[in-house]
Amino acid sequence: MAQFSARMFDVRDTKGIQGWYDSDRAGLERLVGRPLPTWIECMQAFNHLLGAALQGQALFWMVDRDDALVGCVVCSDLAPASPLGRAHIYVDPQFRRYSVDVARVGLDGAKEMGIQRVMVNIERSNRAACALAKKMGFAPLELDTVLMQKELV
Image (cartoon, rainbow, N blue to C red; front, side, top):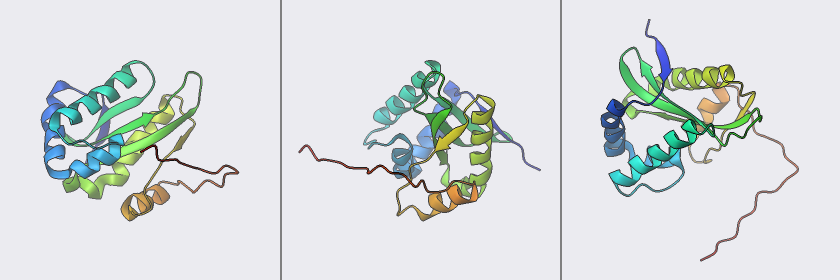
């Protein structure tokens, strides 16, 4: 049976991330929350994630299935002494059938690090991600707040 494990980013992962960028730029853009028009901007976004992890503001792990890099998990928006984080997952398109395993590795790791509650933001149109979140036990929040925006164009 295959083993899934999380580990810190290694410079050798750059080749795998570039493969993701070349084949699934839109998926990486959803992960980092912004457009990535060039490979350089993609690496800058990953460097930002790594920097946040080194400063204790995020957890950022690469996920392997045995010896193959299959994705990464991020728990962002961490604040000192706060048990809350925002979960993000990316799975290489050729390994999407292992999305539950990748998510489980990330959630287990976050729990081990003391995170007690995680939230996810998912575009309604991303049905696969919504289904995965439900399968992992996430439920919609019923809030007394209203999310509002204003375009400053």
